[in-house]
Image (cartoon, rainbow, N blue to C red; front, side):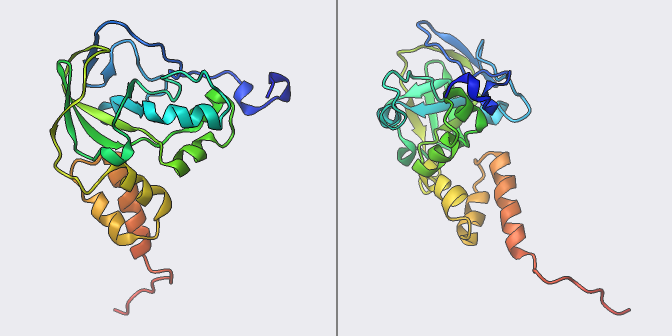
Length: 217
């Protein structure tokens, strides 16, 4: 839609969503790539969301779905676009080496309104959740230089039961499954923000709907 429509995405905003490919090694620190900082530090970034990752395989789907045949890698705001590792093949706690750095999967990505605003598709955030093509985050266990030709090498997989895809199912589609919610919340390598959200959901289900009355003395 044109800017004449006065949509909410026409208002000024601050974002780190516009990405450009790099052709040389970049320093990866404990809160992300040097020169690729988050604009909104309150809700984005931090040590458990140091690197936002998206699968290159999803771009074919989105280019057709959104009628944007030239949708470039980086279009979903990711810092790293990877091949061969969709959400079904990645798990919480998976540890990888990448160049000089060492990384660990911390949580699925929950895309925010900025994705919809970037591409001016009102329900794009919801579409991403429904498809399960969310991407995920790495925490950085060891800093170092990472180059565009470096490959992710799996070093450890402590929780093969918790794929990113399954985590998304529990968070977005199986909200009534209290047992699975509790089990995921107890995964020690899951990010603290996801643990807090899941535990809150468990606590709400445990709270009686009737009002408590005071006990006699």
